[in-house]
Image (tube, one colour):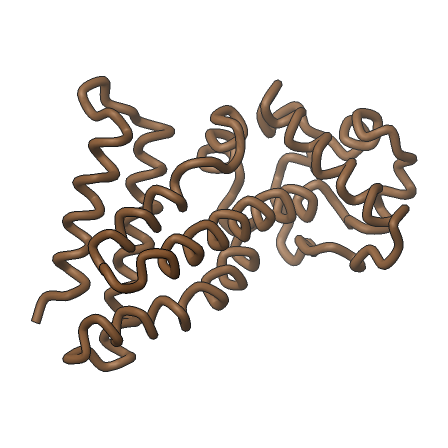
Length: 209
């Protein structure tokens, strides 16, 4: 079976965490090589041998930390999602007293930055969602509690459960818009205006009675 096919039951997480400087350097080199290769040729041309060669590490060293290509790509995606979540939460905290400003800043922070466009395109259009599911769940778990706390603080008529549902809608709406901007861009819809309109809609949805 070609490596590009997702196999049922395949492990898609790191085998182990790096605990030494050398180990961390190996993992970082593998991640950086994967990003570079995704940007150049997408998922179809990506193999663990190519990643190891580009990273300058032995294939055995790669397999010491990653069982397969799927696990490496999942780690790439997880790192980008964690960085986006950190920018999102920092923006919320900075504008805590002004919910509309916080939403605008958080959406912009979440959308701007991250992987190069070619890598983002590959992650969104070529990588099976199941490869990335564990990373999404872990990042969501870190983002939800402080976001619910802020919304209930600014809209005290909401219960925590209601706030969580609205935030779920808001984050997935943002993700959907980002996907559209990458995969199906419209010439008339520049990103800054789209994000501004999205922020206004989400602010209204979050606080409506």
